[in-house]
Length: 360
Ligand SMILES: *Cc1c(COP(=O)(O)O)cnc(C)c1O
Image: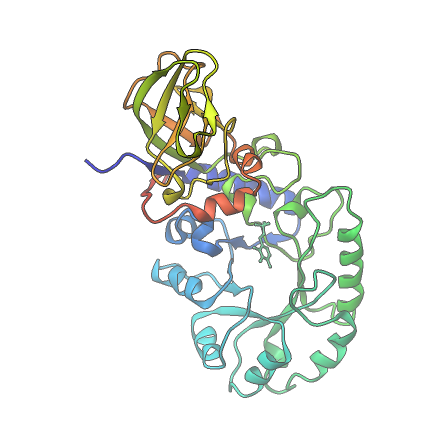
């Protein structure tokens, strides 16, 4: 029998979340962001489950777009980082990959590429990672070959830095900069909006929004969990209770002996650790669940196992499945205890953990 440490992936929940993204997007269409192996859920399964809902996918790089085609899916795929070498543009054209071009160098490649692929231009509205400055856009668009690349330009993309924070003035400022920079081309499309922007009242999402984390049930909004926003968790990370024991007052647990029992405590060892992608920085007090009952971690997370306090679950027995995150324990809560975000936890689940799919 295989080791029963698994990531259960609920594809019905994924479709529920995508549908919610579409509702929030209003008149914008939503390209499903499935980069980083579908945020760790498996890109082929995730893209496949959305195939009859999502008109377009978005990924970071060419390799991920190829994985979508290898899964037999035909929708256009937006490459959010463009391409990394000129030779990739021909493949984009042939396979309906739409690179988002962000640099003068990429535009030179485009000019030399023969028939161009459908492409987008990235506008730097304030994030200051990638893109053309709003003031450079006129020159950039006029510089596109009128007979060659200009007709292949689909439109403009920008990305928000602080959309997760409802109190930040940054998103309004970025939206205004984007609107004014792209004003000269009303016939072209506009794409803004990570998941967080879908939850901002009054936020325009233009023609295409780009939900990622919300599809998987992670919260894009500071201080809220996914379920509090109407999202359903897609991944349940689960591992068996391998052993239980009684600790006496004064007994410590695990590396560094950083946790010591003060009263008689029944504890359990769970077969999951940072070698599976469970965050090592999630220390004592991080929630888990067994039999629907919330329990918490004690001591340090090891590579292959971690310890839990079973006081709240006296019926728990060896072999029981422990939920590390899922329906009972929102992944956002675990991320908070580990000083990170749900994105890192989802994408960090290692290859040792089989993904088991339901709902499709
Ligand atoms: C990853 C990414 C998204 C999706 O962001 P979420 O916060 O996961 O919704 C959208 N746009 C761009 C450019 C991205 O890189």
